[in-house]
Image 1 (tube, rainbow, N blue to C red):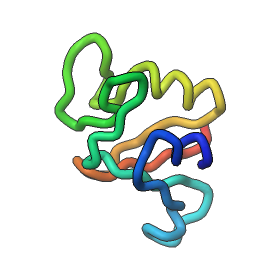
Image 2: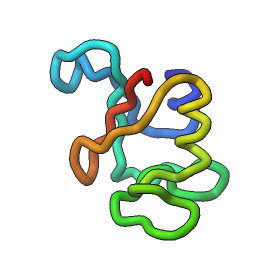
Image 3: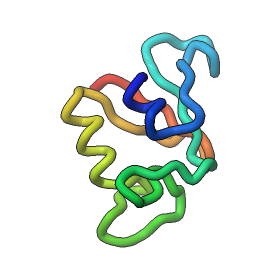
Length: 81
């Protein structure tokens, strides 16, 4: 969560969102950036994005054993693989 907080304005736990344990709740509406590109943009297209998630960001999460999942167009949950 410390690494996420360095790049994102809003980082909380899924317990705070819905009471379910083990995940991280982040916002897709803040325009947070990683290496100069928006991390989460629900409608983003192009080679840098897959399903609205910046590929480089998702790869980093995956390398650490986590993945992003959209809850809705402005809410993302990050869970362990």
